Length: 90
Image (cartoon, rainbow, N blue to C red):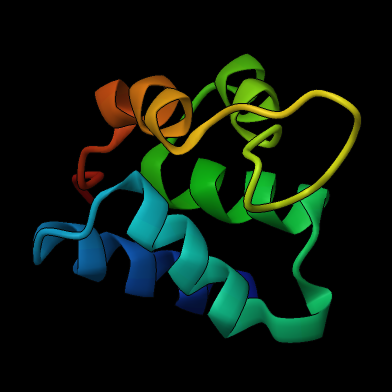
């Protein structure tokens, strides 16, 4: 199992326990440490929740990530991701 798969599994479990999009994103940043970035955020959320790439590209503008020129608020971040946050059935 790769580190990405391990973190994706942790995110699925945390979501099943009630974590929302913001909490999951912060957890992924904490777990990835120095390797956390735009690509790793997209990869782990896509793997964990099968979120379409355009949705994740929109979410990466979250102000707490401080990436790029355009930023979205906490509320916008949750609104973008919440419809896709389901625990993937294996």
